[in-house]
Length: 489
Length: 102
Image (cartoon, rainbow over all chains, first blue to last red; front, side):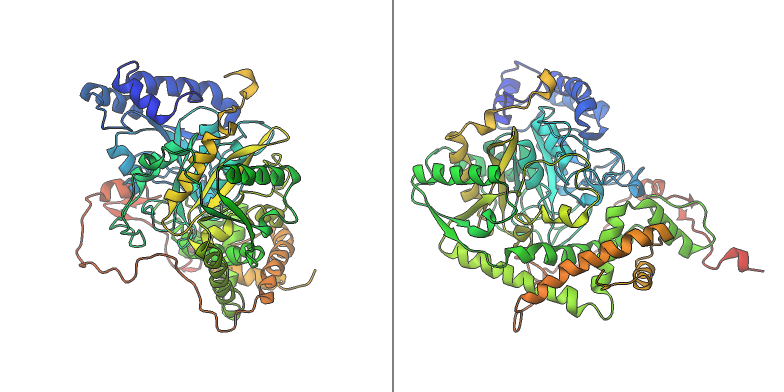
């Protein structure tokens, strides 16, 4: 069983018609994961016994037509806490951590009777763009196993792209859903800040983090976002805005007619590969043919996003990661003489190199004598970047551009050079700084690797992005092209 | 190397962050952090006179709730995650260095 040919709606139809039972679907999913994961390394933990038990219970109850997600398998990024199911954030410091509650997004999917098949690999604490910062393994790109799957939600992206699961959840602080979705030729959304509760998402940058779905189609993505979104008393930054039935709005392949789209010149500037550029220009032509206007616009401060982000995100991370101190849970160093030793040695032995680098950058940016020059300056530049977006979105329905300047790079190629690695996020980071929704979807190929297109919208206007993504998907076939996984599918 | 941050400052920041580094790690980290801080300094090109700080992009402000305790009844499961526990408490080493305690 793989999910190349079937979306969530068609699996649901088969389940309702009893062409397949939830148990059979779940078992087939594990059989396929076991066959393909030695190549892809998407999963850190499988939830086989509990998942099969849950599927049995669902079958005993029966699946009704108004339970669109019942019995559908889902994979969860391993920085989403899951009650009784090991949650590591791909860090040695949480190697044996068993949460006592479910993240809100997870419990919403469980209430809809989705079946959690396992936890996917990521860069440690979601810090990175390749999964190479995982303490446990490096996941592989579904299209070419010598390439990174992107990150930090690289395990989730590779699992969906290789047909292991139809749906996965990721998290996105500076591009961690959109970039791996682009590198693997699937659909991923970073919702508006506040759209999805962050309760139970292991915190990295609290003013930037959002949870979002990763799927093979726009419609599946819309279905899952509606299921996980909404206000939550456990996260008071979660919005009270009504949550539309996003998927129900997707029925018109020409719905972009008359829309104004902004294409920022900075998004096609220096550093963006020719193959990526030409795919995005072709996508702009597709939208024009469908009756939209595509204007060149400018986000003049876009290039400062990376610097502002690495100050703000690292500062928030250095504060959030203080809780990992070897006392209440997680790794505790052995060779200690006193309590101070427990803190210092547990953290120094438990955290990986990139996490320590971010903690150091954040602590430096917040420290006496440097706070004004770094943290406050970055928080002001954040306002300037937000104003750039506001100006463009005032008279444009959404912004389009690439997700990343390149296609997936080789495993080992960039990991030794932090600044090069950080610059990969230049087109996704500003969207997190501004709290806007960003949709990543397949827009072509360059050197046989997928190119992702990013659509950026007004706050809480995921509807327009999904409609535009759906229209693009209905008029192109990029999302139908499949990785071969060495001929195994 | 522009020397925006030196080895001693890196050690000072590590102390604030409750981290420690070997000499070899300091050798590698110091120039790396210096380069990244150099990248941070490009922000000085942006005119932010009179610009407000953005610390939060949520549309929710000052959400109030009753201050009511909520017992999840999970203390046993929580303690299972503690590296060392006894009789319902988490055990930690002495605050004062035991080797000096004589």
